[in-house]
Length: 291
Picture 1: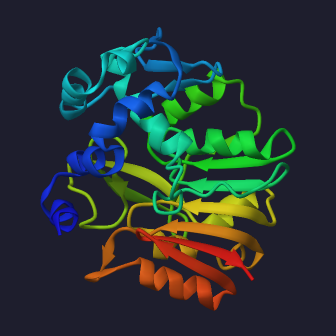
Picture 2 (picture 1 turned 90 degrees about the horizontal axis):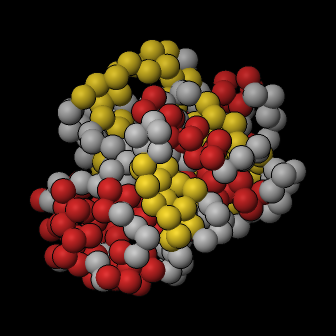
């Protein structure tokens, strides 16, 4: 009851923190990251370095996140983590490491192998793509598709700082055809090509294309796994996969928003089931594995 009420009345930034990151459990999770350094580079981006020597660039925290850092994080958790880099630690926990107990519910899937091809639509800062690049290894390939310039700057910084060779960044929005479109964007990652999904805080004109066209241009004939997280444009994304979908082994679609008053994950599940996938739904995320 309370979680349902929270989804309806709280701002998106507050919901992210309270429902996803769970402030009272954060100290143990942050400590478990084994952060050895945090700082700001010459371009002004904050960063976090882990004991594994992996470097993550990202955004500064919101006021709510600053409050959590100051008052709810333990002294041990704050060790080597400056307040301006706290948001990065949160994103490492959720976007890179993922929820250990229920990855599908948090929109994650990691059951692919070295040498495989992984596509991420809506790559944001590239944390999930970075994890995928580790799993598929030098013989595999990751395609990171991200339409927002500011996000791509940080995505490129993450790829460069970690000397990642198997990630290809594509500066496109996902739709069912090639065209220029207006994307509405809230603060940080929440952006959508679909009306009424996000608050119209700012708009950007972006180049969009279908997944079929993007992969054809990259000379990719089949994919082992694709993750689609495009904030309301999932149905258009699937319409743009007429050639690709039959040659896709596994697909994960985060369909968390309503279209025409109904949550899209039911329609997504129907489409995937009709295309020969065995489906599982959790938290609005639809996983399809080809039978």
